[in-house]
Length: 272
Image (cartoon, helix red, strand yellow):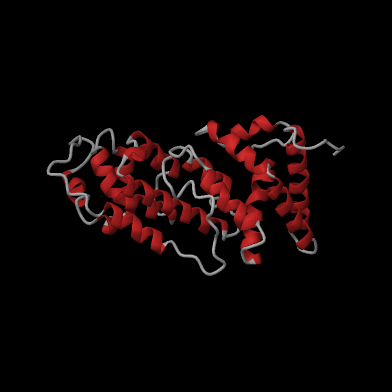
């Protein structure tokens, strides 16, 4: 169990406005006790003394450009686990706001290499709560090319093997409890997975292609798609939005989910 937050199946998104600030504050607080390194290992040909000195500033003040360079080089030519731990809150908060010029996949690759799940419990839990909050926020915004749930999950799976907490939030965001506006955007992200991803509904194994960084998580997402709640929520959205411009695309997603479930043994296949 990497984080109690990531495995919290009782989580329910609030219908009120949502902010990352509380989770970000907890993240910075969890890592605040880490001391500065007396000597930071680095390659003098690859990393300047000025950059090394600049990274010693308070993490919340570090520039996106500096943090991006550090992420690319950490573990090889600039610092190691201790330096990465200290800067992790800034890395994750900048990544959440798309302010790094490195991919989220690289961020999680570096965190996995540093064995972040073995860090002190307070740090691991704070990371879990922050990324869970980030995913909750993502589901409240209509999908767009750089802001789609299944792509975000694929990137994060580079460093996280258990997606159950995220899938619980996705399921609950589409359910009957949240505000209808939250339901609509969360369903929109599901529609993207079913209609705009490498998934071929008649070949359930292609779900692996959606998660090339960590194919093992595909079975968890398959379980999410096979669950009766997901099918029910998507069909309800198709009915509720039948008079809107998105109706046709949602209906396509309903049919593709039916075919996926049938091919996966979830229901008797009907003619397309």
